[in-house]
Image (tube, rainbow, N blue to C red; front, side, top):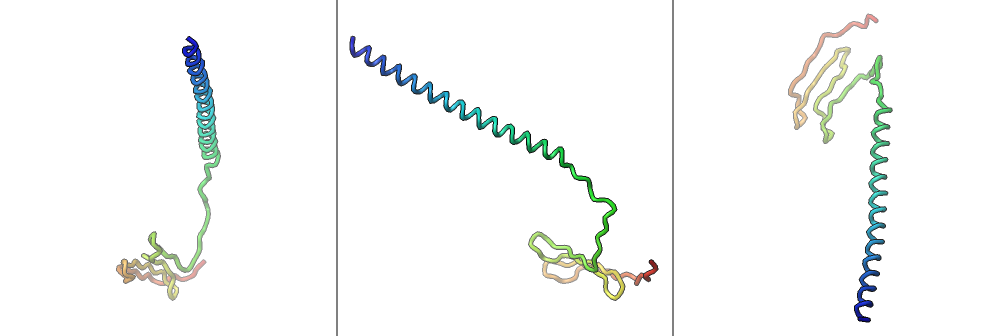
Length: 109
């Protein structure tokens, strides 16, 4: 009978230790869940509050605009040459595939 008491006490001690470990893991999981939840809520609130208005009445001026692909290859160019606007489109090897020349515009402004 003494061995039964000893094994039941050992079993109870093991169960208590497992219950404590389970509670600790539950608290850690709840804390992690709350942290993720609050951070996602904060991100959504920040995105809602920072809706930027598009730039209006803005002017971009240049003598040359270049159109590049993701690799940085020039695929098109809008330039002013000899007082005339010119648009050129290039293929992958850099050859002009389409080009337009416009009549010169007198500066009447």
